[in-house]
Length: 125
Image (cartoon, rainbow, N blue to C red; front, side, top):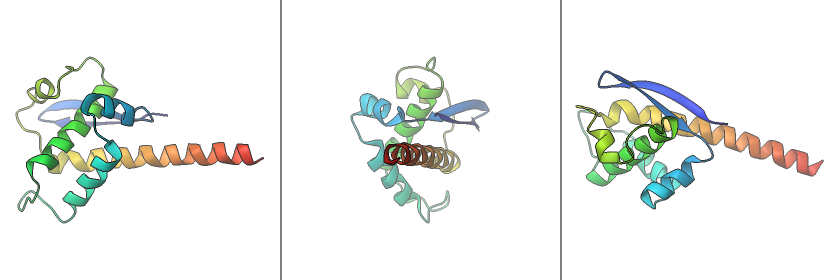
């Protein structure tokens, strides 16, 4: 079951989606593991705010890739290239958007875990 969330970015309503397909889509788009990248992003963001950013360009790229993947999953009509998609925005604040992406990812992980537990319970019976 997909989880969706719409937020405003630079005056534009953007819908993000996460589901069991998200890790595969991310891997196909960027040849990376979204589980490891999201863990890295969450660790990098701890204790950070807009006034004292310790994030590097690698962190920003991981964030942009995750946001693009979830936006593309929600709306297949957005451009196929992350750079082209980012060009639609004047400003793209990681501090405003990443908490929403992390929340969406967490809700998706919880629903996947619950579905797995139900499957296991049915198998045990």
